[in-house]
Image 1 (cartoon, rainbow, N blue to C red):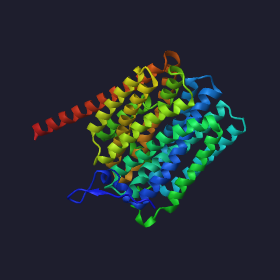
Image 2: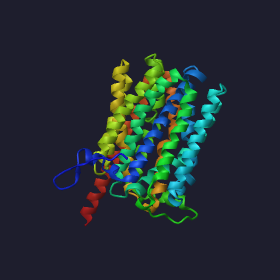
Image 3: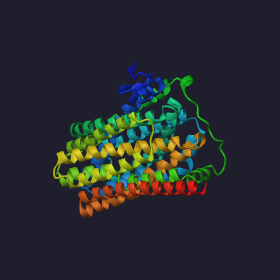
Length: 425
């Protein structure tokens, strides 16, 4: 078994390498991390293969059709909102994750089989994307709150950041591998390899030591518990501000499957290999952002604001890049900022929420972050088709600036309230 060595400061606390990777000293989290890394590589391979299948095989570089596929994959985050948060709060999360991982593996297998048989059509890809989105709606929410059971409250922010590191290390590896495999063995076999990769995360779930888990408070199942979650968030100005920022960037900013594919094909006249390499460039920055977040003790509104600003600037630079090399460099900056923002918002909302409400709060965050993606994907796809991919990336740049303004408004309002309270005291 892999063991992580840690360096320590004079007061005995982890520092440097040890501080960033401290959650990996926990056996259960280490097993979960390694299994998830393998599965995430497969997931990113499938995303690239699916995008390339739609963009170059089933259509003639139609970004709108690709936007529809992306929309169908993410709209279930909204449709499943009444149930996925409650499932994460009320059910055994480990068993729930086993079920969702099996379902995702079977869907990848099905798409691979019909692709290899030469029977795949655009509507079938749409159906598989929608079904995968339904399963992911339950899986993603349960994954986010299950991390707390693996490491406990004290290590939650670090574990969330390392989870993001795993996901984005896979984003760095998977697309580059997929770009090569698509050319050598075809998209169908890439889907089949992804189906096999789910065995790793299923094995990690089976190998967890139950006695070392940190059981969380589970709220009683009752009618109206979803409405209770909405009321809870509605009473919290901090959570509402973060949700609005997440909505803006998640809807209009995080559409990089469309941005990168259309830039690779239309602006730079590249092939699947270039698409994979550019996606990996974004992932390099993402891994850096996740590791930067892992060093930090806890998230704050300042982290959200600065990362949103960096995201907007990075998208603007990418939109103006004259060649693939400069575009890749801008993508790395954008990926860094995007991951700091995503990690900070996830940790902030978990740590700021009562334990019994976390499943519903995080389901709402996922619905806002991913449920808005269908609207953004369709809008960005239309912009890319009619005005070009550079203008589409300009939409992403604007989303970062709007998110910054939301954060500044919240901080201004909070200072004003604090001033009024101190004056009346």
